[in-house]
Length: 320
Image 1: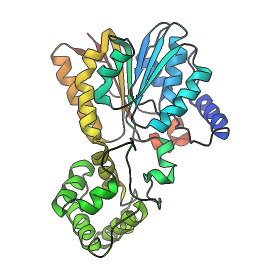
Image 2 (image 1 turned 30 degrees about the vertical axis):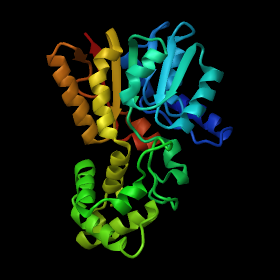
Image 3 (image 1 turned 180 degrees about the vertical axis):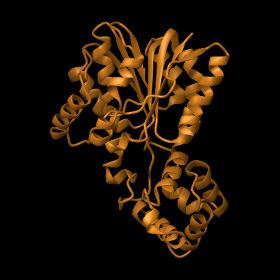
């Protein structure tokens, strides 16, 4: 039996653990479908490149048992420490965790003494622990200084981009990564405002974007917060998310054993297209076989319980 017998069971466990833990735990998406597609078996080696606070990792660790090995990677070192504590308490087998990026997966695999894995998993969603920590500045309502980095040990912050990039660069970021229809207007307004004072917080930036959207259309047509696309674009740019995903997709055949399986959870079209096109090409090259046609999606029950998964798409492939 897998670690999570059902989505309801997963939620109950997370609520119990979070009550005893000040650090907010991320509720893993589509756990049952992930386990079904990856088919983890006792003694397998598994790689979770988005370990976070350990939701999917715990499920995999339980499935591969005491003779298996779980290797986890995450750019968020603070979340990884939470996962380390949870795995030490509940994992029946061995695990190795590394703070880093997708593009370093082969290097970390070597450090863990693994040539190739039976299972590779990537969940590309933003973690609940990041959204609920105001100082990380992922939430629209945050009054903290704009940051948005998964890895707070280095790299460029969202504040530096918003207050330092040129108007053309900002418009390009909002359009390319967010498909934001008002990208030029938002960029121009940012540049005008920062001449008098910097834009310091997500709340300030969201209000600025909201005011632009209000001038260009009826509020009745807002299905999502009008700052959603631009803020997502900024986060993607700051963390190099699409470049890291491309690197992972190129590494996948080398990371997997023959007949090994990989699964990727995506949450917007830019990610989904990259996975679909890369796997289609690798399938033509005889490297992978795509296992999900059509893609798997969360059940209505899970969406009702955890609305953040409503846009999730799960794809899986097998190494030939």
